[in-house]
Length: 114
Length: 117
Image 1 (cartoon, chains in turn cyan, green):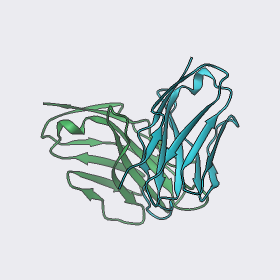
Image 2 (spheres, rainbow over the protein chains, first blue to last red):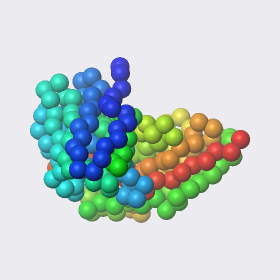
Image 3 (cartoon, rainbow over the protein chains, first blue to last red):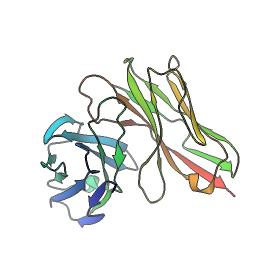
């Protein structure tokens, strides 16, 4: 079974631009979570989607948004990019995120904001 | 809010030796899950082991085992017979089993493990 895939793997943008990152979960998985990883803040939860609905959201500004499609693929969007948005963005998928359900991570998208 | 603390920023071990990584957490909940993830230089986060809080028995996966002390809110990872491929950043993570904390893993700061040949 193929793992979680994320595209693109690397991205360079300039301040003020917007960016869209994509995540394809493991086949059959319906929950997708997004995390931001930076050297200073570590790993922080952005949001989680299940069956096209956002069920949980972390403490990030409204510039960070996401959505999930009917095939469970998910996208996250960051508008009006700031230098501090430079980070590794990880998505993780799981079957239903209930019980001891395990989240499997993708390889990440490295975003650099200049 | 839950917090996870890994007090060892770096650890090192000789190949074939045993090393223990520490993790403590703070929560008022009684039902939750704990995980250890490994992140090698490739940055792909890989699940190492998980523990359900309601289970008293410590989880074991081959060379990896945990010492789960619920009352002390401690969750350490023991790696036996360390291999060069174990070198990575290790993250301890917490997930609530209740409420609306869907998908939210709370991570510690990580411990960089170096394995010397």
